[in-house]
Every structure is written in structure tokens, then in C-alpha cells.
Amino acid sequence: MSSNSEGHGRNEAFLENEVQMLTRRVKALEWECAELTVHRDELSERVKKLASRQPAWPKGYRPQRRHNSNQSR
Image (cartoon, rainbow, N blue to C red; front, top):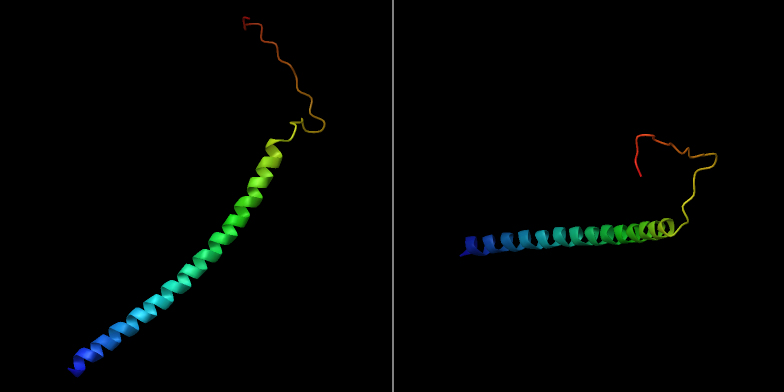
């Protein structure tokens, strides 16, 4: 009978340890998720700002028109 209760105690201790490890893992993942959410929101704002900006040529850039005589209209 003592060996059975001994095994039960070991199993219980193992499960408690497993629960503690998994709880720490969940907390770490929740923290990482929160950081990624903040980063995503910052990037989303940057994209929205850039997407709504008026396009402009870089300073000093002069586009050259190229006429291709083989091209038909």
C-alpha cells in the first residue's frame, strides 16, 4: 500500500511541476503577444500614414520621356 501512495505522490508532484511550467509559458506568451500587438499597431499607423501621403518624386529626379518609334498608337 505504501508503494501505491508513494507513486501517487510522485505523480502529483510531477503534475504540479508541469502546471507551474505551463503557467510560466502561458504568461511569457501573453507578454510576447502584447508586445507584438503594440508593434503591429505602430506599423499599421505607419502604413496608413504612408498610403495616404501624396506621391512625390525624389529631389533632383527628372523623369525622361522615351519615345519608341516602333510603338503604334
